Image (cartoon, rainbow, N blue to C red; front, side, top):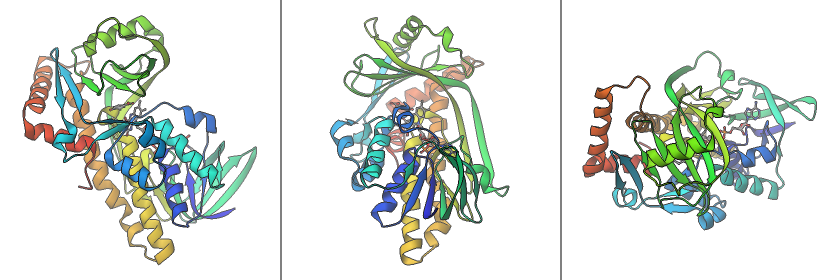
Length: 384
Ligand code: FAD
Ligand code: DHB
């Protein structure tokens, strides 16, 4: 099989890239290791920056997002028993965020791909990529096959195979954190109409939501946390305590999982015919709500560059791809690291650390300049 662009991975990055290319008359084949059912139900991110919403709408896949997404104009920071609002829209020149589950974005993009009757192979695992020739070896329906491509887009997430195919010329940058998030999806009406990011001596907590009936909640925990030590009773009492909510805030838990936290960037994000996008090239800790937004922004840049190459014979966009993306990526890396450091309590944190964090939180919630910096990073900067 041959195609112009071989795309590995049907997460937000791979699916949006395929869609953007189709709109420009460029053909692609998407290979996804998992089943459709699995990728459509994987509970992950929930916050879309204004730029991501605009991008999806302009690409013609924003109809349900604009109907069902919850538009927010602020977030709450909670510490020392007090709630302080950061008025995002007021401080960012009118921009806002939209809460809409990542799996809903994925469902919308899969529906668009299938409606156009274009190749999207589920349970097709890439097992080897050759950056020089643009060949992807993959396993599908019991057979081993090859896909010959002019360009390969590695959109296969942090644990995919494409990054290894960049070879040894690339440089990785990593930071591990000594904590993780216990994420919970629960059948309980949100206790707040905006997100609450809470600092607490016992650890960070985050209150988000999906619908007026479903809440999405996170608790800081250990990276090696055993879920068996978190019976429902403990989850609810810890959430109530850290978020400052009363005992009525509880409901049926629909899903729970522990996610590790790390920062990671590989430079450059490209070698020969292979271009990485999204989590395959970079990871941020989730506190800044940036991962999915970065994935979508990368493929917007890549799609534009591929149009230049295939339609106009101009390869400049592809040459600049990595550098263009990395400017945004490093801004998000810094913001995500900063939010994480301000809000999480390390196991070996002492009184000095706690006082620094509280001072930073007081500053961010009392200085318009500091709050503006948080707001413009949170809603998403144009390329910096
Ligand atoms: P993925 O979504 O990981 O997609 C990669 C795809 O490639 C997968 O479907 C995988 O099955 C497939 N694949 C892997 N290997 C192969 C192979 N060998 N062959 C074929 N297919 C393969 N981001 C935000 O922006 N906002 C948030 O609020 C937010 N919150 C988060 C909360 C949590 C708990 C977590 C875990 C993440 C959060 N993120 C958030 C991050 C966000 O989910 C990721 O950044 C996003 O999924 C990246 O998209 P992607 O398309 O690059 O990768
Ligand atoms: C959600 C996830 C995040 O990582 C975050 O910072 C805010 C909200 C969410 O899943 O809703």
